[in-house]
Length: 313
Image 1 (spheres, rainbow, N blue to C red):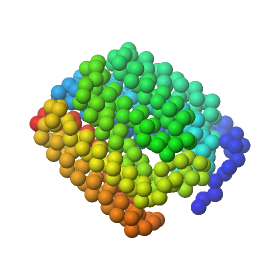
Image 2 (cartoon, rainbow, N blue to C red):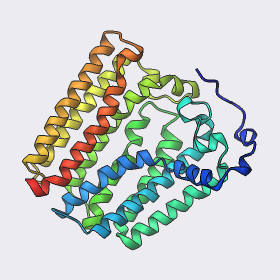
Image 3 (cartoon, one colour):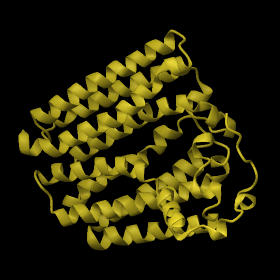
Image 4 (cartoon, rainbow, N blue to C red):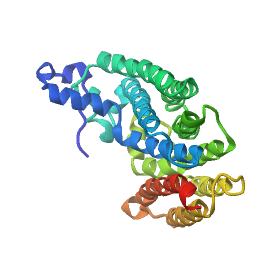
């Protein structure tokens, strides 16, 4: 394992005052965690199509996407500011800007808070104030409830902390209608039940990292068989909830067919992981990342079907 430099960040900032402007810009972008925001936008834009029952105003889509990026980016920057102590000790996060010293903690704090203010005003002035309130609520939930209160205290951190990642669904709906609906609530619950079985396989892979810093992710404190059983339970609920859009009248045969097919494949992978865990398979042969990677494909397919269903069904 690669040795981790455990010196305080300030001591590792040798020469950081001479970092190029381009490197600093890249560091500020890295604070926003762009790859995570991609997933959030995947769940926001299709819901706008469903809420509109067709193609929403494209300027509204653009404004919602920009506002969503600013808000989520601010939340992620503040998350990195708060977690900079444990990020320095974890292999997968030791190259983050506040650990390497490319940026100072104060810069990340100001940057994150500025994005929080700008994104709220952006939503309020260019979209609507309902979406602004939901956006600010998602940011505060992620930073305060998940990062500050849950992450280091309970193995249920990702379950309840994941609510922040569900709110972009409601933001997408409210940006078009100014209100919420049962259809939006169903898709909110899909992401709620998707988040734990999406993240727990990754946590199984890097549980030594979390154990080293005392973060009680479920795979750290429970056996693989227990984690796999929880993954299967959440997976069945998620697939069942995803099919509710049809009987509630929010989707037709196309969405239902895609959700059912993708859900069946998900359940196959979830049960396969459980079977390997029960057999005592460890290390690379556990193949826990198969479900993690499929989870991203799954949510992309289901929400693409959400966007296309009004035109096909």
